[in-house]
Image 1 (cartoon, rainbow, N blue to C red):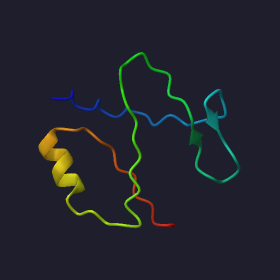
Image 2: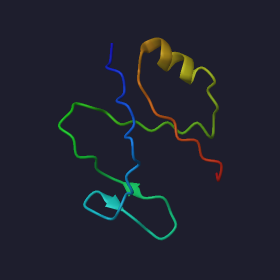
Image 3: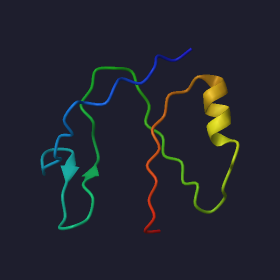
Length: 74
């Protein structure tokens, strides 16, 4: 079983332009590289075209930790 996701930081750090992070005006920062020595995989799931209502159930059953970022502007 994969390990649980770590707790979020107490204070939310502000992302600034730096190697691996691009900041453009009022757009959200674009993170292109996350410095880590942990063996992790980052996947993106675009649930906009096809809404798979079983996705969260399946990830829960498999014990896969994930973060969901819901956007209402698309």
